[in-house]
Image 1 (cartoon, rainbow, N blue to C red):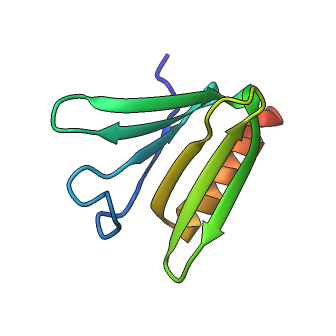
Image 2: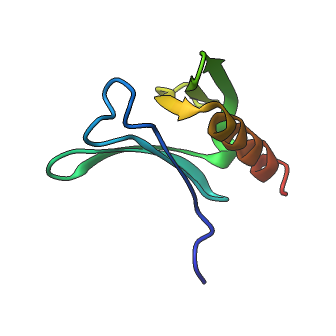
Length: 100
């Protein structure tokens, strides 16, 4: 069965995302932040059931996202996303937590 995955990529016009933009991948099971590098990538993930809060800080064009876990581990941080994408990320997480 194919995995139903939503992918949100940060803008290349923001600091730190020029060559290898950060991706936020959301499935029914987990939220994952993928930071590509020249060789390999760095991935952080939190199970949907363990997400405690989603904080969106908006600017003129871009938004920063902070996803906290209920286990007290390091939060997932990402910046350079469009406001609409940030809101969609929050809505998807809330929807998956309620079983939607």
